[in-house]
Length: 273
Image 1 (cartoon, helix red, strand yellow):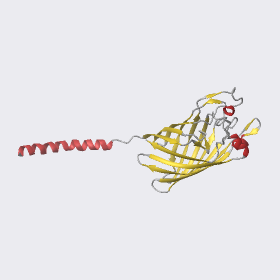
Image 2: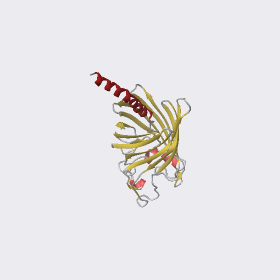
Image 3: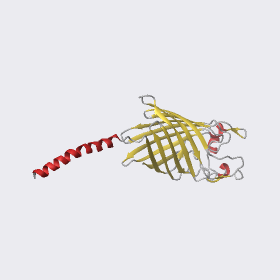
Image 4: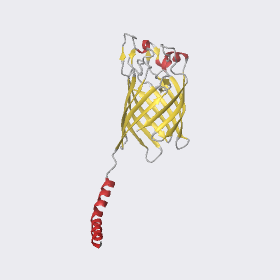
């Protein structure tokens, strides 16, 4: 018995340094300098800047994001749409089933303060069939924007500036901008109040008519989101726009005479992974 105890004690003594070394090596492994995340959601409709992109029908949306500890990030995101084919005689699109976005930029904070910033580029890509024979004078809707954002805790202001000349299918509109002022205020650790004001301001002229008078508008959003277990979120929001009669006519589908900027309520469930 004593011999057995002695052997056990000696084995324990010699194995201890290896156990400590193994734990130290594991603890010393640095965390990767990047994160890779994904998201997927089901929405009762897709609202973009106050306008329904699916004519009030459901949308499936998702994407992936790569973020480096230095502040650089890149990602992609997709959603089904119908807005380009809801008015084919106006848009020139006979097929355009989805929106596919690509973006990248750099974000950080001003020192150790609660103020942050974000600058980057975003490409909106609408794969599909476009024909000027179907609608003479029309252009593709693909749009490239540069953006800059400043934030403080739950409040942010973002300005997006178009770098192309045919923004969302509006010809000769280089320099068009969109101002986005948003708040995501935490009411509890799970419930968040969302509020937003946007101003889409078009530049340029088409056939001698000011794009601003035809296509510019303001939009509003108010909603709530609730965090569920396992990285799920549910929510709902109300959206509305402010337009002149001419602008409402511009944003009305020719297929069903529906104003895509009318007041709407959207619900959703979303997951991150």
